[in-house]
Image (cartoon, rainbow, N blue to C red):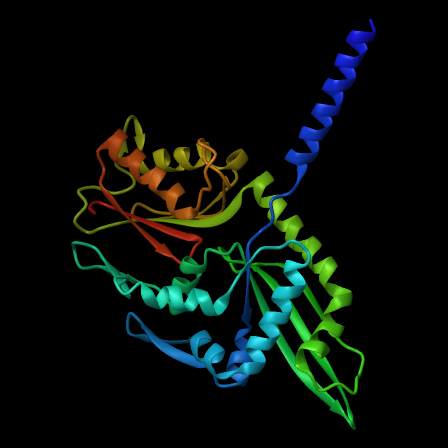
Length: 317
């Protein structure tokens, strides 16, 4: 009987330890970037051509090369986050990695000549592969010999740009002139709650799926449309069925649907696939692309915009 009790107690202890280990939350990877407002205010902006339209975006490369204040601020935030167990991606290193990928073209083109463009920020997000972009804005206030700092932190989902955490405030005026010290004094009372919100958002992705947008279009060369029947139902209905079966708890909205296009929003995809590997929007979209080809012999081209928008164009590669 004693041996039996020892075995039960031992199993209980082992089970408890396993539950503790398994229950430890996986931390989101984060990259600290200056906000658009800060970049515009300080003149770090560049233009790119998006199919004939001039678009302005933050010029992170020039900002990190020319602003020592920015490097100091990013370094301080990195230190504060690392001390709390949050892995960080370095903005400067990610930019260098992006530049080294010389083979990556600015445009993706189909065999029919149709194009879709990516902004420099979209490309940086793909290279950095951070879960969350931590946008930071700050201003230094001067009152006589004392200085203080007003800051605003936004934790943005890298896939959707939706804010999942935020913090802002003004530090106590101080005689120190060192920017990192002022920043630390201002941020310290807010950062733990900010990190809790980040973690809660990340945990929600594991439970309810990560949100993406899926667009279905067709090439003019495609012999048919989304109302043509395949396997006893319209192609659009077959696509909607696949989306329902491959989202977390069937969570998605069919926002628009015609014979030529479909728009699925708030599509919740799993964080990991059936093999236990991390699943991103591109990998999930390729599953639909493969399903269309294998099941209905329908070719298609998959294109990405940023990390969270997948476009599948039916009819050819």
